Image 1 (cartoon, rainbow, N blue to C red):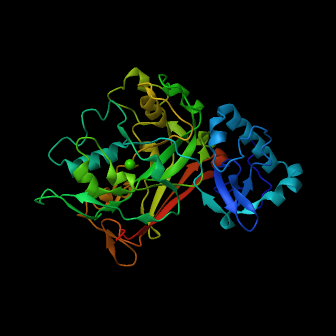
Image 2: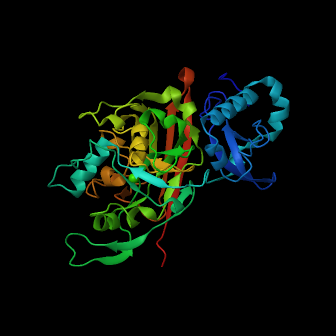
Image 3: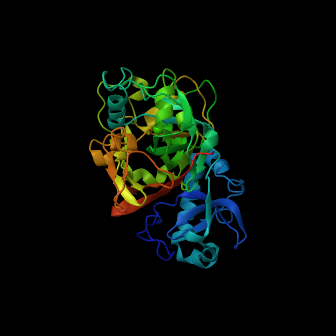
Length: 402
Ligand code: CA
């Protein structure tokens, strides 16, 4: 694909021609009902009229029909959109369809089927182990043999910009005689990368690690909002439940894996060597995340250092014969690097509240206060020294319901 677009301002931008992320947008004044678009520069292009298909892939209010169409369809539509946005001969027809990105409303890009969250950063797992289980080995004995995960709540996955109502729940500190109920006192974030499943599979089959790209369409940014006090009391022995299920936010743009090929890197070495079904296709992605708290950068988590890769995660998720559905979302787990400013959660950044973070206005934070806004952005290397944007996932904390 030519790297050059006729769309003013697109070349060299994070949403340049090599990216072409998909979302769902509406524009009331322009009469645009929610429908699939691609971002190009500071504009969006509705794809229904131009994608060159008669298959109904873009007729609905979600990307799911297109996701279900499979990799050959993803590649042919992407090539077609690339041609339309680079060939000057298409400009006269296509340019009037463009809408300014800052005028459209962006919606949840796909209907989330099942949602799984992993726990695949070695540094994050080690930090959490040290905080929650200071007298034991930080990593559980299974951690380096399988990508640990849990099934989350698909129905509370929301699009970036949706407010976060502080959850209430049951908690009990070790020093408390009995549990109590009330607003969460340790509301936290988890900066993650999510993978969007397109092609479904049948129950009783599994996806080999080497075939993952036939099933995973693309990538979103994820903020797995986490209620640490609720979580600490409830998580033994079955893992996360109400401390996680109240809300999970995702970015409005799904960046195709095909756009991220220049970002594919060899993932870190694994010792011990995993079982054969986890041993192949150990590619990672060189994604750079930034976490802002009320506008101030508080962390720069490096996704490229994740121990378990998306291919291994999907192979593991299906190795028991569990099927995939179009719209399944699996998230990486909190992305944390080795240094303090690379930690993707406040519980790590503030070391469970013992090392407050200083903000530019002179205040400090251990966990989130009502009114706080957290924004996670991400970029990736593109072709020829360019950078691709993953957009952002943002949310503002509102008080607990009375
Ligand atoms: Ca998580």
